[in-house]
Length: 45
Image 1: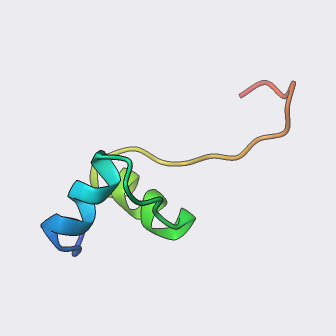
Image 2: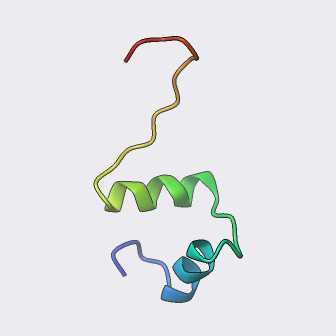
């Protein structure tokens, strides 16, 4: 797996049987070519 996690872990997340930690979620997004940004409401990006 590109994420370094077992397929079963990813499968549980996809089936909404498990909630990933913020760290794992950000890592999965990174592997997929996305990034997680937290911005103040109303601010313009």
